[in-house]
Length: 73
Image (cartoon, rainbow, N blue to C red):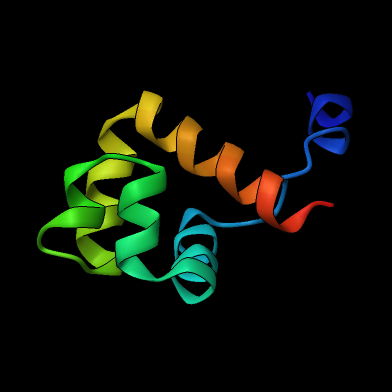
């Protein structure tokens, strides 16, 4: 398991940091157009986004992938 985490580029990065960094980089409007999920388009807040993303693994995956595409170049 530890070996797997070593190769995970998101290891040690919290979901809150991911959402906060993406919001700072793109803003809610652009984020909502890149990933069409309600928490980025309506009732926009870090807190509501985290709540939704923790319940929906498919949405979290999209957010994590965008984070890697944006900041791991």
